Amino acid sequence: MNNLESLDAITLGALDWLHLFIHFIELSFLAVGGAISAAPDMHRYLVVENHLLTEAQFSSSITLAQVAPGPNVLFVPLMGWNIGLNSAGGIQAGWAAWGWGLFGAILCMISIMLPSSVMMYKVSQWGHKNSQLKSVRAFKSGLAPIVIGLMISTGWLLQKGQHIESSNTSLVMSWGLTALSAILVWRTRIHLLWLLGLGALLGGLGIF
Image (cartoon, rainbow, N blue to C red; front, top):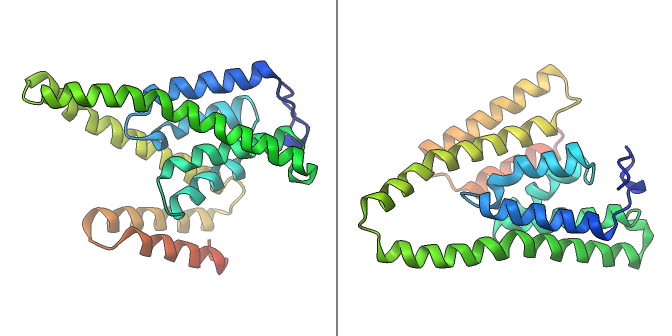
């Protein structure tokens, strides 16, 4: 694989696609709390180490999936789509880029969904039958802080990636808005879509 600064120049062979497939399968088993909790490791693998995505592509994939109707796991095929486009030389490559984008989206979606879905189906059946066992209740309780920690790390990663070249004033305002949003979600009954809409409005006006 070509680890060049320009993502238009990367090339992915069959072995590279296989490594990507295997890595997402591994994340599928580790994504406690949903695929979004595995975003920090996806960032490490896709952006930092292998340069398959830019910071903007990574963040926009998650943001779009959060705003659009449907499960937020859709950010995974969006990442696969962008990887496929990058491997073909960008959207300007025409139908070849669309084909590789579709291939990347399907590959990433299957690898992140299939293993965990099968495992959770079996585990949930067993857990339902043994829900009164002290060990099962303790295990469920122990997962809660893990999920919270993973979600915080994902939010930190996205916030940091959005403002690599921002001024100190912009960073303070953005972190303040993030903290305010977290408090509103935690302490009020304001629907999350209102906060997403406000964020989109502020971004559209160029405030953030």
